[in-house]
Image 1 (cartoon, helix red, strand yellow):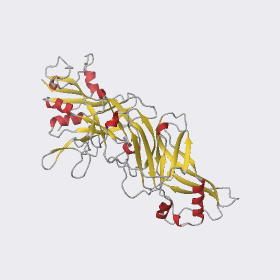
Image 2: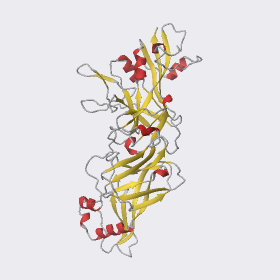
Image 3: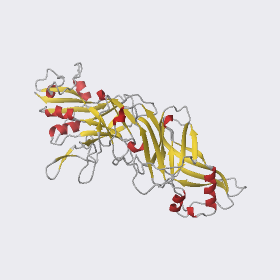
Image 4: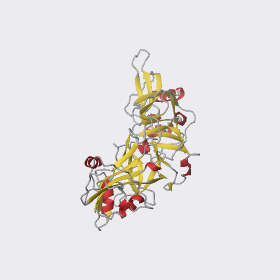
Length: 462
């Protein structure tokens, strides 16, 4: 199967001086095969057409969004007219090195801190200090899968808290003073070779872990890296005469952790969403929010109706465009890419039966369909990767070329599916929800339904 692709720019260069009129697609009153203005009215054999196909979106709340061990704790929250009040809490166990040097019985505790390594943030009002607190868990983190709706109980009073001035694109380590009673108890147990430091299981009985919290009213969410730099640090000297401090660290590296989210959408368009894996019409605006588990579902029936009425067509360029996005703060950029996964009436991502690989639109340079041993035409899953809609930070739109995909739909018998748009960072791999924006942030976007369109240039023989 050969895909003929001609860029928009090439056609514009050939057709300089000819007025291009945008003709919207309306399946109810116009024959789709006649949609579009013939760009070269003097051509005898080949007509070049442009069609603009509006698509509609509904919202789906993803069921069972797994957030176990994403390597990042999402902490804080925000308030939105569209999504309501959202709070993210990071939960983690702690660990220590069995070979680390412990203080002797004569050692002197200088200070104790709880440090957090902030890799990034989304925020408003960065001219004001932001507050965070760490609370001791009152129940253990188990060796099981945790999801975004999971939460653990913790002590109301924090064992560490702090107020910090943060900056856009923060990549920093901040430290809070540790509760004096806890610091003294930990130090004493280290000095006296207490059994809690014999092994990690004894320590978890003593200290099950922590919940790290922010304040949604401060409109700030931080990403905290799990590792050696996030945890408790005890600074001590071996004697009064010692001028150099030593450090004993109880860290979060290789510790089980997860992110939980709380949301109150009362009075917002999204309050109608009450069941998972159901598609909801939320009105003129449609939006998605990571960790909360809301994604856009695009109804692709208008494209199918359009293709079913064409004959002898070649697709020169097909681009999916959404936006511009609604207003957002400079430090609260939307997700940088959206992966178009296939879905059906289940409102779940469809997978390949043989190995569970996720079906999605493939990149324009990749094969879109394959033939199985029984002769069935199936969506392709390739190493070339998915074909994400990318966010243009200057135009504030999402867009991507789907030329090969539209051509494959037209030329083959592959089943036509609707799309679920999952947020993901361009550099991350794997399958949802691992190592992607969907479980590692509270990034969001909202677009007007009228801005979701497929823009198609195509040719057909007369």
